[in-house]
Image 1 (tube, helix red, strand yellow):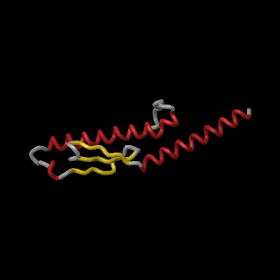
Image 2 (image 1 turned 60 degrees about the horizontal axis):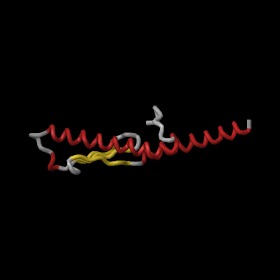
Image 3 (image 1 turned 90 degrees about the vertical axis):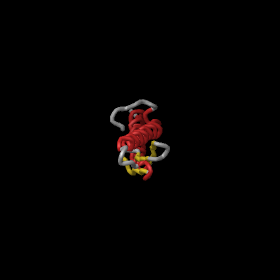
Image 4 (image 1 turned 135 degrees about the vertical axis):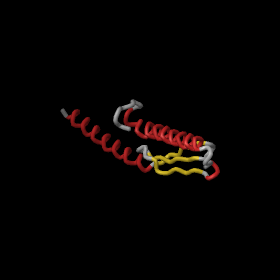
Length: 103
């Protein structure tokens, strides 16, 4: 019975550490880009886009599709980097397992 209590304490401590790590992810920001930096997108560890920067020279009213593609590519790049960040930060708790619902 004592082992069970000790195990429950360890589980509770791990849960608290994991919640703290998840909260800290919101403060971490990654940057994705496209077009050699013509479009940059910043996202936090909760997959929220926090900034988009577009260099004026890529804004061509006659080629809106190109700008749309650059923005889409930069957003996807940023979100992929968030996935990498989350895997790295929370991987120590999950042992590398992909647990649904964590992010």
